[in-house]
Length: 151
Image (cartoon, rainbow, N blue to C red; front, side):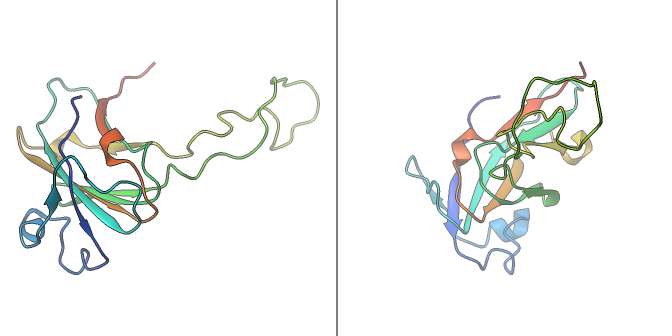
């Protein structure tokens, strides 16, 4: 997917103003440009995108963000928290012997949450609105909509 053009709004009033909806996002002044706020806590980000072709499942890749919530066309996708990483020490896996919960750990140090399902039924052909509330601080230019396929 191509890079999205982001604008932002700082502060905690976004929820009360319903900036996650098309109507609410139109009532506030968003700052735009190449100097979009990055790694700033309590920041709202806004962008638009066109629906990708095909019928593969879609997911929002939030790996560059910290913690918060996201909406597409006013629908809540969920809370994101990719800054929280899986703990533990990954070692060579062996199923021999007694089972313990720490045996055969995988993805140690990786984000415990990264991809968030986006139902195609929520999308319009063009001008889909994505809103992200970032609580900790993240890099919105790394957010992308990706096609997912089963292996």
